[in-house]
Image 1 (cartoon, rainbow, N blue to C red):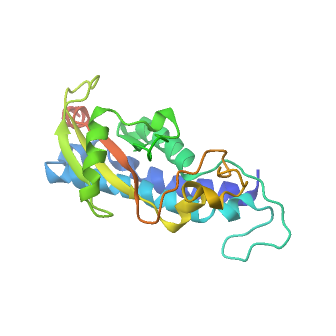
Image 2: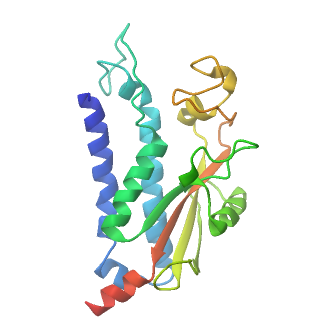
Image 3: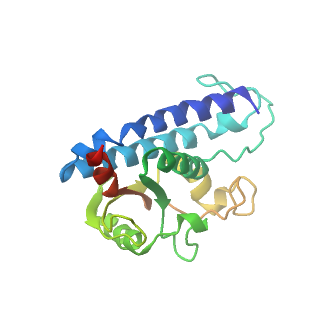
Length: 219
C-alpha cells in the first residue's frame, strides 16, 4: 500500500470522525432546528470528503505521485478502489458505531441505471426526499422528524442533503464516450451513466435517533 494512499485515508477519516462528539451532552442540548444544523454539518463534511477523494483520484492511483506536485511522467497507474462512494460507506459505518447517528449516500440513479450498489438504494423516506431535492439548491437540505421502522425511540430526525455532479465526478459518472477503457465503463468497471455538470446525482441521508437524547438525559 502506497504512502500517499495511507495519508489520504487517515487524513480524511480523522476529519470525518471529528464529528463523533455529537453524542451525550451535545445531543442532550439539541432542540428543533438544532437537529437540522447538526445533520447538515455531518452531511456537508461527508460531501466535502467525497469531493476531495474525487479530485485526487489520479494522485491516489498513479505510482510515485505526490500531492501538490505534477504527476510523474510515464508512471504506471493502478486502480486502488479508494473512491468517494466506498470511502463514504466505510466512514459512515465507523461513524454510526461511535455516535449512533446513521449516514448514507443514496440515489435514485439515472434513467434505467438505478443505484450502482444495493446499499445505496433509498428507503421509502429517502426516495420521497430525493424527489423533492430538485427544488433545493446546492448546500440546502431538507429535514423533518419521522417514524423509523425498527428505531427504539419510535421517532428520529431525518435529513437529506443533495449531491450535485461536479467536474471531478464526471470521470466516473459522465459521458460514456469518455470512458477510460473505451467500452463505456469507468475505472471501477461500472457503466458511466451520462450525467452532466451540476445535475442532481443523489443525496446524503442522515438519521439522528431521539433515543440518543433520552439516553443523555439519564446520565
